[in-house]
Image (cartoon, rainbow over all chains, first blue to last red; front, side, top):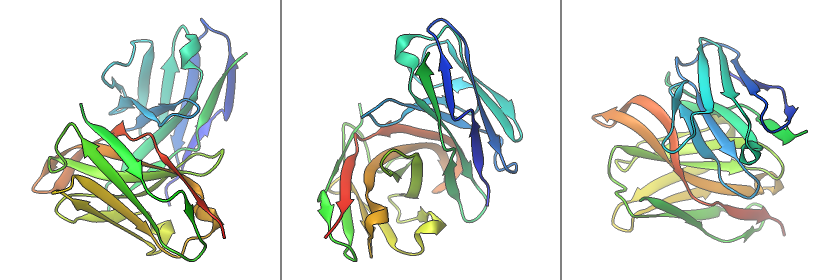
Length: 110
Length: 127
């Protein structure tokens, strides 16, 4: 079973700082990683696809990188609206096809 | 722009079947998209339930052990979810979402992510 582990579980930063969120796969399941942002009471929103491509309408301060089993979401110059929970996700294409999520990183205001 | 709306009973008794509908508006249900259900237990992360294509092709989370079924009704532009033999552990917010992919003859050739989400519906399992 492939597991995505996100770290840290909680990240406390101030507006204007840079956030670095990690997502590590227990084994290489896919060449690509997806990131979502979720705010309280709202559904998740697609942030990053194909490891490093921003979804429509996502500001340039959000960037993704990585390969193999180690991936990173970087949010530069944090804005107040960026404080939320972030999830990484992969699709396992080998049979049986499935989708896995990391457990999430909560980005909170310090 | 495509919008999704989940609906269904907010309260289900243990051992019964949870049935939800996701209604699609503003776009096609029959294009090169899979449709997925995701749930979120109270205060917890996201759990993938399964995804389905309008051809009937479906994939499910193995952890749900055969309790789940999904289908697409193209005439009504709806995606259904049925989860049988529910317990309190199935209490969650249930989301439907569109899966953005490229496909060839119904087979996913590239997966991008879940690009459109419904607002979710809360289901409580209790007697």
